[in-house]
Structure formats: structure tokens, C-alpha cells
Image (tube, rainbow, N blue to C red; front, top):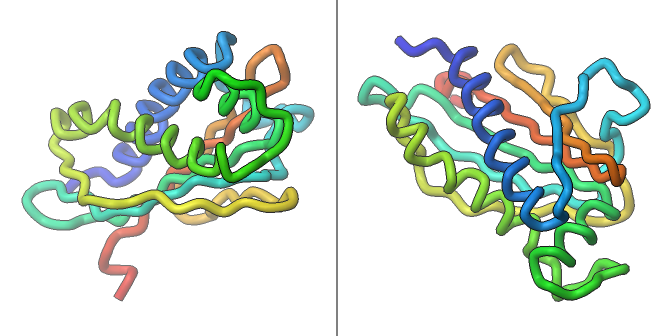
Length: 171
């Protein structure tokens, strides 16, 4: 049987690394992990959330259901959208509606080979989004979860949350 806590931590840390690398490309600033105890910079409100969920196969059977959430503040979302699309965006519009979904797809895609190399096969999935006026971000209080907030010196913040439920708890 696989160590589910180890898998959640490996997912979160490896996704954090690929997300930080992607974000740096689009805003030309280094993103680093913020201490979860720093209440001044913790991302508590979100304007846009991209999420996906998929089954994860390990040891030749489906062991886990993995969920990944990227919570964005509006300022960060606009800055990353501007960098990614090469135009300055100061307001949210249909033109940049799927940027967060693309970032999530790329973040996971960059690590698919790594996950395969450590013996995990990810099922197919499509990301979905939640957007609107600022709403509270969630930290999923289950035994198998990890959240990390990335920040840069421009005040941009993105929170990544990885959670995992054994599939037997879904039925």
C-alpha cells in the first residue's frame, strides 16, 4: 500500500516548484513559498480559482482521488494574464477567462513524468474555474491535505491546495 501522506506532500511540493517557475516567466518576479504562519500575507480571499480532480493509480489499483486548487487574487491574476498574453489587463474580461485554467494545466503537465517516475499514474481530467467577487479560500481540513501560498515582492499571491481522499471514502 502506498503512503498517502507522502503522495500529498510530493504532489504539493512538486506542483509548487512548477507553478513558481511558470509564474516567474509571466511576471518576471521570483515567487517563493510564504510561511503558513505569516498572517499578513496569507491568501484568504480569492477572485478566481482553477481546480481539477482525478483518480490516481498506484500499485496497479486506484488508491486516491486527488484535488488541486489554485486560488488567485485579482491583482495577481491580471498581472499573470498580462505577462502570458502580452497585453496589459487592468480589469477581468472574457479575454483572460481561461488563463488560470491554462496555468493549472501547464503546472500539472510539467510534473506528469515525475509522477509516473515515482509510480503514480494520473487519470484524465479537465480543470474548472470559479470566479467572482472575492470569496474566502478554503483549506480542506482532511487528514490528507497540504496548502502552500506563493508570493513575490510585488505583492502577488497564489495559493495552491492539494487534497486527497482514499477512493473508498467516496462510496
